[in-house]
Length: 227
Figure (cartoon, rainbow, N blue to C red):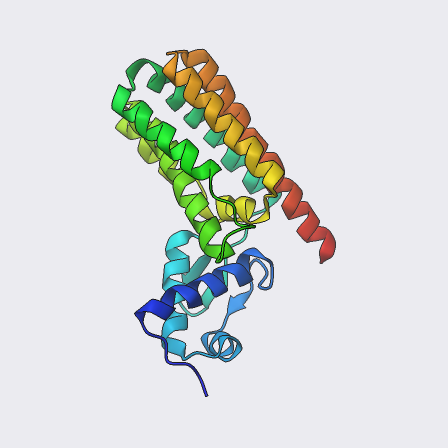
């Protein structure tokens, strides 16, 4: 008998489906058939359909006419292009922010840095929820710096450039060591902003983005070797 899922259980269905994609159970460009997913998860098709819509918003799934839902795919060349753009745009944002950021914004970024450093998926009751929270907090960190750059056009460009699935994939595969490195970069960027050092903020931000790029490419290559 299939489970009837209420609003409270919807997050569980979403989390399980997200994990199936990020962990590679469903491969890039693979079709996601509602009936099969419902059978696998022991739920009706309605929560599966709702979860697919949410996953499309996250960028993990593409829903196309006459094809249905498929897992989004990114080639290594895509990753190079995406992260190269991110490094330039976010580096520039960090440089501008160093001259324009307010004390209140610095305090908020400091809180975010500490919050992210305090999240440990290995110790969490719900690992998927902990990773989702890390991704959210990470987006707040980067978004706050872009906002502090006082360039609305820049923010829109970065929004179009950042691919959430790649961010999810990175944090899902990060070990405590990789997360510690990411947190270290965040603290160094914050210090540069506090010191009004735009050049330093840009350099560290770029290096931070490239570090993430290298990790994602490594993961994609490992996935390809397992096929």
